[in-house]
Image 1 (tube, rainbow, N blue to C red):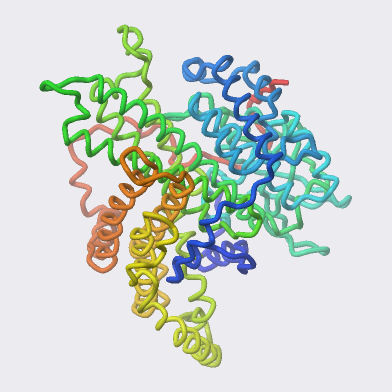
Image 2: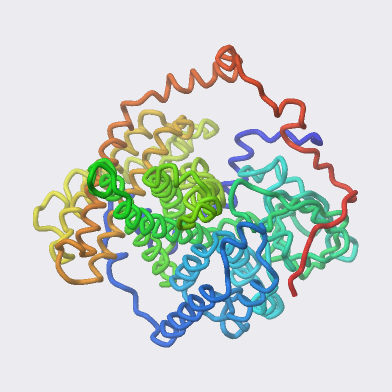
Length: 638
């Protein structure tokens, strides 16, 4: 690797903080939840629907369902590790590449809710189809241009995307992941006012197929501006761009993910999205909604896993009765059914909040991505366990033996990436925790800032005293303490009272953590992760209660209310464990042990094995800017 500039922890945080939207101009259910203010009214009423758009969306889903069943073969994609040109053309004909693009630019102009449902259909044929459309439309060119582009960019690029021009989003580099302060791809201003791009981008989903790219590059300060990380729309066929390889993974066969090199790639000034230096803010804002695509695909995988588990658990007989009738398997099925329904509820509610235009869903979308990706993995893992040896056997091998070709092991492989894509679970915990404590940092941040002078600390102390004098007493008693609260919201009111009480307890715990560790709280990542996970469970409980209430009917066996109540009972136990673990845990000893492991003090525990990877190459490949020495492996389908 070329020498990276030294970026301190403080500098890295400053870059991330500057990119983060700093104001809350719209309401947020989840933000208030972490503050101990439970507001079910913010997600309970179903938002008013546009009947015409609703009808168009339903018709599109019906047409997509029919097309996928008749024309696409997920097993062929898995075997060939490729989505064929014919498949891509068929999806283009249906308008799949423009689902959320406004109709005035040639798109379908459908809602986030219908987009999520379309991803579910695509993902159950093969998850690489969902990844293709998600990378194109959730974080690729359409979303940032729609939100930040000028009229000329919208007319030019949105129309092309709706017509089938596949796009990709290029941020990650071989030695830069979730720490954009170290971004090395450079955009050098020319005397004419254009830019020359130089650098290497890794894991460019859709990068092999894309006609259009969103590229994040660093502009050096210049006479006309401060520069900074900037977003560009780049033509993928521009001279100097080389897709040097197509990467392969444990799952998501058919994913066109590459390594792309830029060498003196000229980009016109008109290709800047927004302004210079606004790139990271554009990326984060785009992801606020874009992150909903992964939970939608997780819902699809969980629904399929539940269906297969139910059918198999009735078919397979052991010791005189179907395996699903044995408690050990019944417990697994109960978890799968309840969790799948909660995942769906969370995605539906988050999609509706996005469509409403009146909610800031940065926390809700992040919680949905974190929670659904983690829970869907558990659901699929239980499917493999219930299937036993057949769960570990490939669908091709099963078919060769004359049995139903159930790709249980494939769904497990395909789901694993969702805990890493678009922010790993560890990064999501930190991101959500930062938003959850935002109100505290707004009033008391300077008080715990080691760089703040005495005058600033005094002002912060005065502001903090005023805030907490009014806020803390409200956390002692609330509607959750009354046995009649939320009765108007249906038979699941008891679960909502639990959410309200726990929301206040969660807020108090967050305050205690800040008071105890002050500026050191940011390093208590185990504590912060549990705070986030408790909020995720509370959001899921509220969403599933709201979702079930819309179906009406009673709360008997087979009803949505019964399934929602089962989920809440399971979730309550997880919350209880997390609350206890806030203060009773092994975080300190574990961190000490990990430090000793890193120092090599326990390398003796690794003896007796053979590591065949030794000597095969460096941990991080060389990525020095310059011309490519390879033939491009890019392909075009139209």
